Image 1: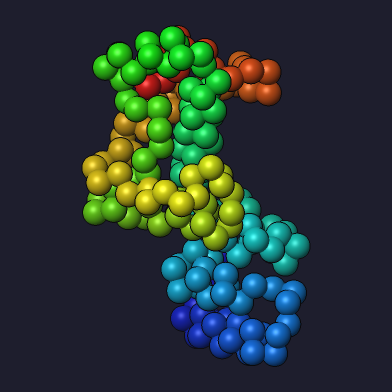
Image 2: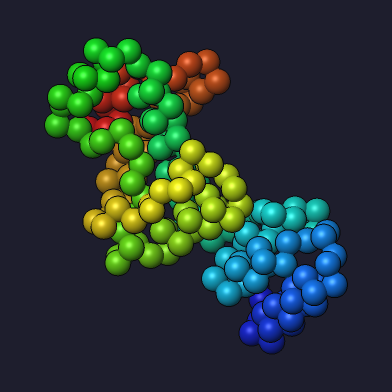
Amino acid sequence: MEIRESEKLILVMLADIHEKLGIDTLDPDFIRKAVHGGYNWALAWKYPGLFPDQEEDDPPVVGEVVDFLEMWSFIEDSYQALDPAAQASIQEGNLMSPVFHGFDGNHETEYLGVARFIVNYLERYEEFAGRDLNSHHRVVPRYRKMLEVFKPIWEEIAGHRTMNADELKQVLA
């Protein structure tokens, strides 16, 4: 969704008025944060009835972050479902930790910002709420490689079971 600079000012001012009048149909704080942060796409996520045709207009980074969050949510759930011996086998391998640490705040700021907005303000993937989500090192290239391995596994088992230790090892390798 394209919002011109003048429209941003109008939206923020209307949010302030909305809040001052105590109208509770929309969340003025959310609207201000979305507009100030440049997360215009999030308005359609929060209020789909107001923007019914906007979902396909999400920036590509949003879709990629959602894929990563979905993958990490499934990885963490799968790891937690393993017995202690299987968890130990993953810890002993030279694998990536089965815990989502976010994105690099210095070099992957767009990814980090989108992830934080989805988790903290859209309240999706709440299992990551309260985490810093700054990995302090670049991770996007690695997540992309992991996603290539993860997608075929997920398509085969989604809705039926979590990943087993061998599948987790494949993805975390």
